[in-house]
Image (cartoon, rainbow over all chains, first blue to last red; front, side):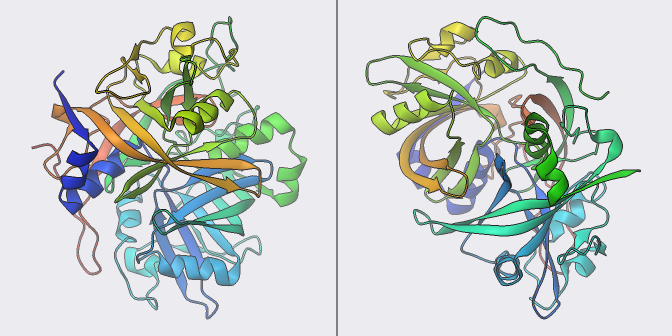
Length: 216
Length: 216
């Protein structure tokens, strides 16, 4: 297998879009989801994020990264103004519509309408869920962390509502997101479904790892 | 499809390990990689991380989240003391060994040796790469961000060395990490390979998305 090697000066010399594609691919497969919000004046907004990050389980915290540029600006403003947003897993049926939400629509355009996804209001939650999404989370804003090194913003929220298919939930709490048809992405624009290799037992020194059969 | 619904009080009532599994599954598929470090006294360390996050392409920044608890403590200390670490993609051949690095080995034990992976020193880089890994990154520490809300730490580094198979690199800079057999994970212990659905064109309002054929 022939390898390509790039050092810091090679990376600096790359043409801008090429570097964006390259660096975005390097972190591995990414969590990708649709973030639904409602503005104070009632406009709905939907945006795809590939920077979803688990921060902790107690309290249940999840983070998103916002770049300084649009089109995520409506989402950020709505989160900060209203305090609530939804996070909706993307499946094979809706990934093209999900990708289309990254187009720079005007603030008064609902991406739900523009891309053909259905806003769903339920359980007294203030922000719209995506009806076509199989796993839906309601999030309450908790903290904004400024990442000064490149002028990005991390928004941390607490998971306050969870809606998952009953048959994807294991006895031990694990959710089989592959069974829920959740997909992953790599780079800026590549979408992938998955095939489970295994669930592995908790690792301990001098103990062999075994396979876990999760769904009982 | 019957759904299970949990609100904030249901989540709080979950038994601790069940909540850990549940919340870890909710963010979607995660970037997972092996982080290689060398201590000031020369001990090698290798640890699996499922909190790898792309932060930006210019400069090329990538982040890791560290929880307050071990076993990641050796990795964090080595990064802060030496300023350098490696990030190595995990493939189907090595994912069980990679998972085993999460066992709480003593500081003086090299996880490379304990799990049977090979440290590789090259290109004058101070930290060990994983020889069995197909995509290898050399990272220079740049910034530590304290996430006070749950006492975790985000470590941001700059990608200063990249080693990828030549035939996985596209004209436009995109790296076909699926072709490089990079895997993804979900929850604490579930590993998955991927099947590409498509690469999609840059989204614009009133323009239909098309398929990109990436590898030329």
